[in-house]
Image (cartoon, rainbow, N blue to C red; front, side, top):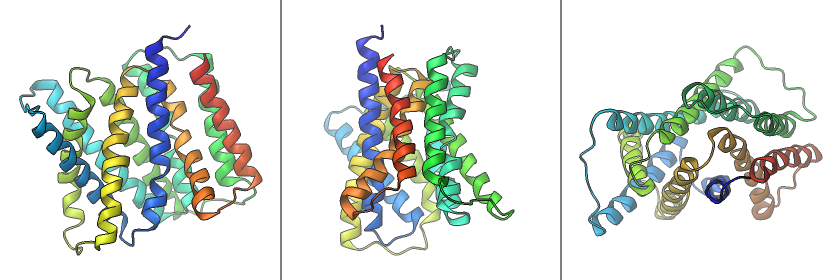
Length: 284
C-alpha cells in the first residue's frame, strides 16, 4: 500500500502537468519568437521568487561542492530543454518533434534505474508503455508520417531536449536539503543567464505580451516548477515519468475548451491510454 506522501507527490505532479498543459493557450496570444517567450517566462519567475526570498529574508548563497554543481546542471538542462524543443519544432513537423520529445519519460525511467537504483516494476513498465503508445496514436493516427532525411535532424533535436528534461528531473531528485522555492529560484536564475544571448537582438514585447508573459512566469514557471520538484522528491522517478504524459493530454483538452478545437477519434483513444497509464501509477 502506497504511503500518503507518495499520493501527495502524485497530486503535486498532476497539478504541475495540468498547469504546463495550458502554457500553449497563453503562448498563442503572444506574437513573439520562442526564445523570447522562454526568456521572459524564466525572468519573471526568477524576479518573483527573488522578491519573495528577500521578503522572507531567506537568501543564502553559501552552496558548496556537489550541490552547487548539481544546481548549475539543473539550470543548464532546464534552458537547453526548452531551446532544443523549440528548435525541433522549427526544424521538423510538430508531430515528429513532440513524439521524439516525449521519449523523456522512457529516458528518465532508465536513468532512475541506473543512477537511483529504483526497481523497474511491471506496473511501471505497463504505465510507460501505455503512455508512449497513446502519444504515438494521438500524433500519428491516420497519417502517413514517414520522416524525410532532413526531418531526422528535427527528431534529433527533440531527443536531445528529451534527454535534457530527463537529466533535469534526475538532478532535482538528488538534492533534498533545499526548499523547492529556493531551488527553483537558483534554477531560473541560471536559465536566465543561459538564455540571455538568444534575445539580445529583439525589441521589448508589447504591454499585452508582457502581461501574458508575467502570468506564464508566475504560474507556468515558478509555481509549476515548485510543485514539480515537491512531487518529484516524494515520488518514484519512473512514476513521475508516466504521469508527465498528462501534460500533452491536458493541452489538447484546454485547446478544445478555449479554441473549440475538437479532438479526433485517434486523439481520444490515445488520451484514454495515457490516462489509463497514469491511473495505474496513482492507484497501485
